[in-house]
Length: 159
Image (cartoon, rainbow, N blue to C red; front, top):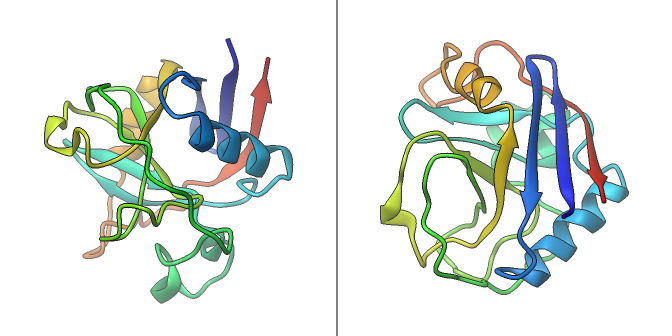
């Protein structure tokens, strides 16, 4: 089992990758992680009762207006699957275009089955849901951005 480990300034979240459900999304996430792409990015969107979102390289800048708009410079094709978006699921964020995922991802903190078969599930949290719960409960602005920086200091892959 391959595991991703997200070390943040508020604690660590680990999740198992699910290549049997979304092989290209897992390959993409592993590749970006090994390049250090996620290190220093923020969880820039938190919605209590729903999810926390991160993985945007624009969050390494102070231009908050660009947060949520960045990616790796390419998009990957959707791999919708039968795994339900229950608490602890890790899924890829995207725009209206189903094939627009790149680097941004989210962790579901409450069952969100309305997302099923519309977003690509590629992981499941194994440790640290209490950290995700802490992140989602941070005070936030009108754009659901935490007022206190929630930084991914290091993201790594363990095989």
